[in-house]
Length: 360
Image (cartoon, rainbow, N blue to C red):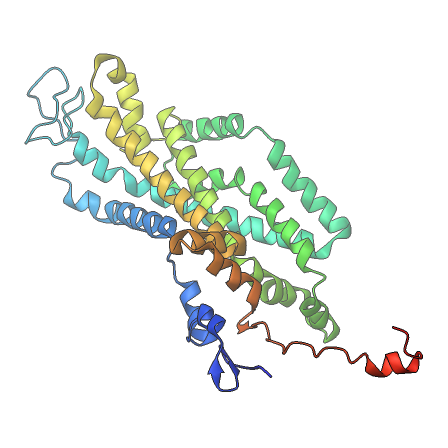
């Protein structure tokens, strides 16, 4: 008879050949290995995002010139050279220095907007999904209003008023962007909370008399962490595009942001006159920053989704049978291998024949 011990199966002291599929590592070791960010999407996205964060921090310090310094050496923008690596503007300002100094405000506004919008999504979405009833109806109606509300006209009005006051408060700008970006995450969190509120561990917490706030933030919210992280990245990406668009339209003080560089380049018809060094670098920087956030978001989806993770293992290993065996034979952290049974003994038909008078 076969006996399963740990990750091996022993039949009369000899290991079963199929036991090598799961390896000899302990369950804790395999669990820690699965939690490592081995996905290429996460690694590439995190590396790109780290580069832009470092650029926003040290960029203004290592810029060769001041972003608003004017070099009166030509009446037209100069192409890239050893003196100006990315050329100059029509006012003879160094584009490379403006590019280095323009990422800090954008990342700060995007981070503020992402934090505020994610907090609103968690509070409203999880609360609505857990409480249900009238509270769910009212909070869902509030989220639906912000979902169907045209965000661009609202942002144009708000930023237009902000531009007239001459204010460049980055926290206020991030708050305005977050007002139009929290509803989508709240709807997703509400739907997931509806599927979690009737689980056994939630019912157990209710039975022992736990407070609603503790059940929401200690029992339900930890199971929604990947969705919260994905919502945060999506909101930051939305804030990057919104702040760039508002600066490009001239509705906020450009302050040498990448959208502001595009605003000045468009005002001087740089795309029509062939001054590519003025608008391609900031546009490419915005695109790469957005790509890093998208890769991180896709990587989180692949990391938390068992089906996508299993597909990734089969692609990297090149052996779909191994991934199929892992999925079919492993339950949680305890591997389960098929038990080999001895062949059934043949039926003895002698007694039955004798009892029937010799008739078969």
